[in-house]
Image 1: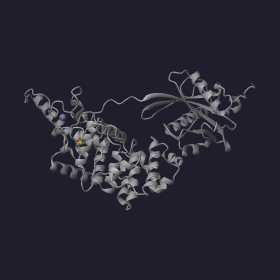
Image 2: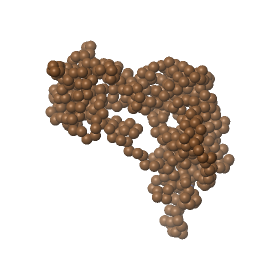
Image 3: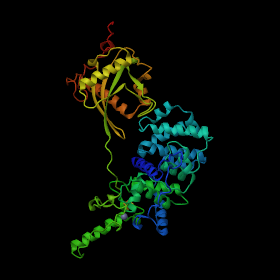
Image 4: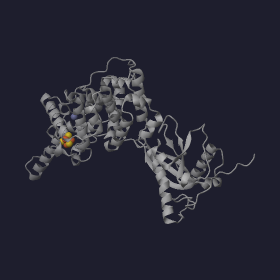
Length: 510
Ligand code: SF4
Ligand SMILES: [Zn+2]
């Protein structure tokens, strides 16, 4: 649900760029030229223009929502919090967390966040480290950072008062786009403004048979117009949530539950499927002359119908809508990561983690010492590069042969297909990395999980622990050769604590 929500936001950004070339979010003047010509009205098939139908859609959807809505903590807060700033803050946090993330995952994070920082003021006083720690595992870490930056801005520049309209929320708060602003304003303030996220895109495209690329600026613009026209004037927040809820639970991407849908009688995709089925059975019975299939809206070159190159596919039914341009494949990347492990008090393992730079991917998060690798390197070469890297960090020579190969861990970021080539290095002395390059610290397993570490790094540690468990459990040492998959290559005898001195040789005098 939330990935689609982000797609809508991305489409919107493109849309704004098309409509207002050269205009930034801060309101710089448009460059050159007069006003763009008004876009032609799309064919009626793709619109909601009948007032009685709009009323019926609102009524049916709200009745269904009142009966079927999920009980979610942010909904409870939005309904019960009397203070308008607190209410807007509570909705804002939920909307940011829900971008790119499933509801089921968000609930626990949301509850912990609101318990720790129940107000904007509390969040503004938190450190980025604390924010990252709580956000750890939720992904897309810049969201938490931006949320906190915006909270600080509200406290320091707006006297702690949230902007009171969707337009001002979008204009004044960094990281708040049109969707988030509309959601906060409609749910917290009752402003009659629509929202368009991935779920809304799907529902509206099906209701109105919109088959053109749903991430294109032209289609996104139309959907916003439609959402603004449809939104219930007296219960805008509930209506918007109902539309999103319908997309999340009934009008789902692959197998929509049309029979349970409260707006099925207004759904043109469903009507088209029914017509096609009727025609097909009449043809079978020989009672129908050989007429052409049910057509699109009938307007040649319609910008909202499916393109001629990808016509309606009867086998897909209502899931013909929406359609999106093919997604760009994520780029492949490889990184060597080394789990340095020592025995702490009572023999419990401790791990060395280092902090990433404060900007860029996974900004400010902690990770095992890592090194980006060129694609296509041999395992031996990777090992050497990692050893050199550790050597530069520690200021002591590191023998490549001392690195124990654990395996490969794959993690998909939104735009990167990341492979971590994992090594471990047991040590029995103290190792600190050059503090000039990155802060580093030793942590117990418990501290590791409570730190601001990414899900990818948790997978890396799990791979190490799995290897150790397998080896300890069998009581035997894997004899697989270096370069083999997890647990194999270059493995040293297990259960044996390797000495730091085995890997860090004293440099010979020059
Ligand atoms: S009838 Fe089916 S396709 Fe149409 S809006 Fe309802 S669930 Fe979606
Ligand atoms: Zn059309």
